Image 1 (spheres, rainbow, N blue to C red):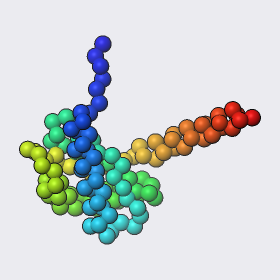
Image 2 (cartoon, rainbow, N blue to C red):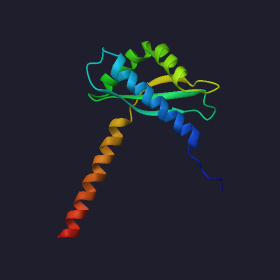
Image 3 (tube, rainbow, N blue to C red):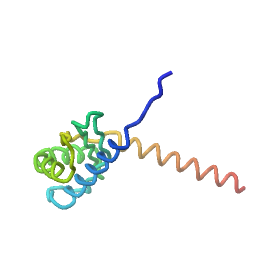
Image 4 (cartoon, rainbow, N blue to C red):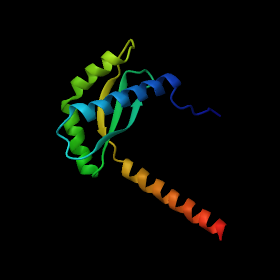
Length: 125
């Protein structure tokens, strides 16, 4: 049976670097946001040529979509900063997307935490 492998250490490092660069850009260079916007995840292809940057806005999916639209206008500037800060033969081309799964992930996470609290309270009784 074939073993399912996750991303290599190099890919993980590139994903982390891109996430930090884009996050810093969002905080310092984009004044148009009406809510808090964050980079929830970066997924770099195995050949290191593409990077999907998933964006999340605190106020919900509509604000997230607006934030992505705004950030897409800044994509060339973000791409240039990434190319200058990451030393690689090929700089991954970024693609910006709304992270539509973020809210569901947070809901499941809160349910798990609630179950853990109930379990701990049951053990103490």
